[in-house]
Amino acid sequence: TQLPHGANSSSIFFQQEFNNWIEWFLSFPKVEASFEEGSAQPLHPDIITNYLHSHACKKIAGLPRRQGSNNAPLNLVFSMFVDCFNPLGNKLAGKQVSLGFMALTCLNLHLSIRYKP
Image (tube, rainbow, N blue to C red; front, side, top):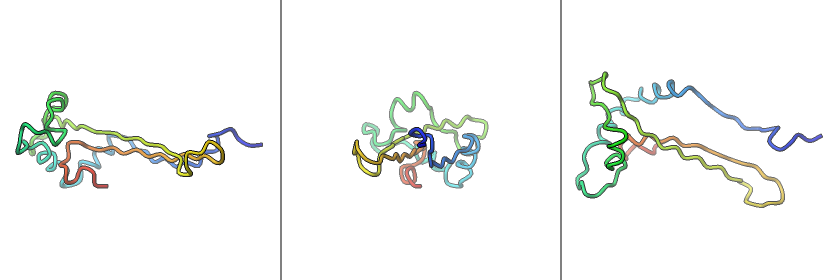
């Protein structure tokens, strides 16, 4: 007998606690320094080229803490992108599989390193 659709998944998921991931993320030497660079004022304040310079972000998240000030809260802003698709094509007939991925981006990072793997 054949198992119902989705019952014999061959998916592999990697997961970890968010607090552990944040600790690992912040352990990189250039990350916290990049927060300051990312929140630096733009050359042209009338033109918004970075989310962190928008009025909405300043209102919601505030600014990241200054280096050396461990007591101040560290307000991080993340963007999550999720996409799933059928790598065999969008055919209704025939074999169907699903491939998906999630990308978590810290918007506080400077643009030069924000989207690096």
